[in-house]
Image (tube, rainbow, N blue to C red; front, side, top):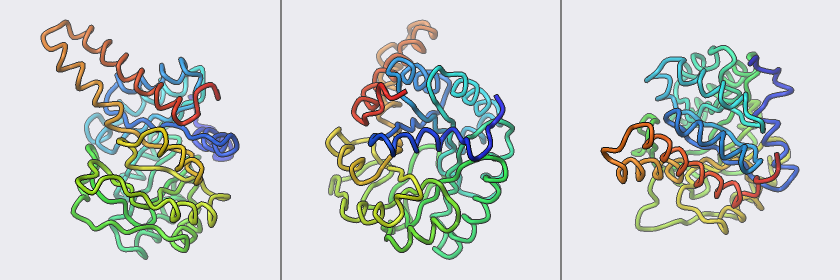
Length: 288
């Protein structure tokens, strides 16, 4: 299905509607067809918009194949579902992904492992490249702590919390989505637990929330009450990884030795149920 012009971008249509409606949309981190199908089925069952997220690993592993399959599944859904590339961490990878015909609707140009000035410069160049192809862009001012499966390892880099001033500088690069660092962590939160700076998130939203949509990373262990606070502070896209994929791993373990098709179907169903729960928590259920 041909990619629409930037003014009709699928990801931004979904997130702008969420902003106007006071809810958030789940961005489901998918590694295989089962999770992609589960996301689309959950969206259709809950009548919710959704975003399918792939990591750069998908391209390294399967070339264009998984991207094209995900685009076909997302864009043929009966409700709005877009395809997003999360944490593309090199300029070469961003360009490679943007050049896949009718693939990604949006790409996270994640240059957060560079120092701030280089991060800004590279982000501006890559946003332009994406926009020329009708693709919306996300960036990460500061640096969210931790690492994630399928993403180049940055866990040893120190977290840098986002300021409203930094957010302004990144909005100037032309991005449509901004992923603030406000105490959120990729992967495990560790012994100190969840310590989010809602005041920081609110100040960022106050500064730039009228021009970009705010994205929540590191949300796997969060409950409905935390999501509601983040949404009240301007978040419209919530990335979920283990909160879906752990259910697939559990089913695989429980059904070891059973026919593969039954394991795949049961795993897909378990993930779908988890995704639908997030859709109700985030307020997106019934909005499509």
